[in-house]
Amino acid sequence: MIEAAEFVAAARRAGFDWYAGVPCSFLTPFINHVIGDPTLQYVSAANEGDAVAAAAGARIGGRHAVAMMQNSGLGNAVSPLTSLTHVFRIPLLLICTHRGAPGVADEPQHALMGTITGELLTTMQIPWEDFPTQAHAIEPALARAGAYSAAQQRPYALVMQQGSIAPQSLGARGEAPTQAGGLPQGTLSGRAERPSRTAVLERIIAATPLRHSVVIATTGYTGRELYALADRDNHCYLVGSMGCATSVGLGLAMARPDLHVVVVDGDGAALMRMGNFATLGRYGPANLSHVLLDNEMHESTGGQSTVSAGVDFAQIAAACGYAVCQRAATLGDVERFLTRARARGAGFLHLKIRPGIPANLPRPRTPPEAVLRRLMAHLDVPVAADGASPTL
Image (cartoon, rainbow, N blue to C red; front, side):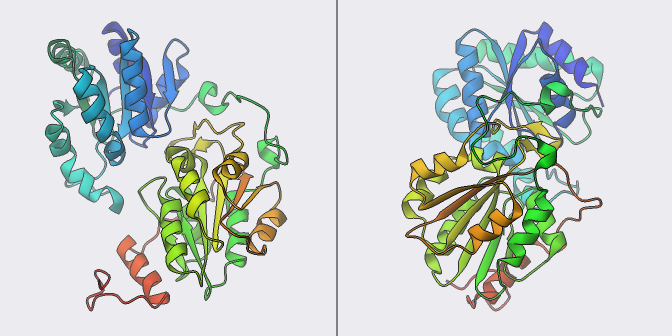
């Protein structure tokens, strides 16, 4: 185990002073240190591909750049790594965590990527090695990365195992995001005044009867809190695929117009795949409700700020064609939105919430595939005899 400052100092000596990334719990101490250092440039990217592209732009501008990501998000970065940095020969340092490493217990969404991370990097012709865990190994690793990048003008990756870096808290620079503009009209300015995620989810549960509705929760604490409050047959907890909850909800709502499909989204997930707003605005049916809970941070990875402060998601949704676009300030607003008369298309609600989670928040004990089979059975959708997959 090393201190984040040890690696950052060595990287600075090697010329690296520009960072972009998406948080991961394994990266938390490292990314917290980078965010907290005012002499370093850090970009909080919406997704891992954007982090690679931004780092590439910085390198074109003469800065030595680092792109940081979780291996589950490496898939988001495949296109820019294969069609941007490879084609244009842009050298970058990649720091990719290794969730789901073979022999290490982890969450189910990391199982497959954990076994193929190295193979995927190799397939993309990106040489890689383990992130150093001893201070004396840092400079040699950076030297190997630098030598390869100088010779080949292409990226080099360091794959970070769990516990590689000692814990470090997030400083004030990361806890108070700079707000680009004023808060959208109708929102509460002080975080302490805003409702909690738990309180909002309680209202969503009350407004989504078991028989005629489905609730799809985005990855992170949203799904875990929904599970802790009420583990119902009409719930689906997405444990990975960050940003995809809205697309899943769209497909389900279009396939089952008899159901009220409620997608509970987060600001980080919405930013990661904001193109979904235009898709839902065009195709979203009247039985689809998109509820965005915005605490302005990636809370499940340590509270790093997103760039949502001051973003008017309701106005974005309106510009993308949602039939109903509202901002909420109270729990009553949430309930009224969910019980609204159906318009010609999808509805959108943006609600600022305060950070914080309940004590001893559990993880869903039911495996993801069992949650899905339960939901499909509840919806009278046939599944295979062994329950392993839908009947096609």
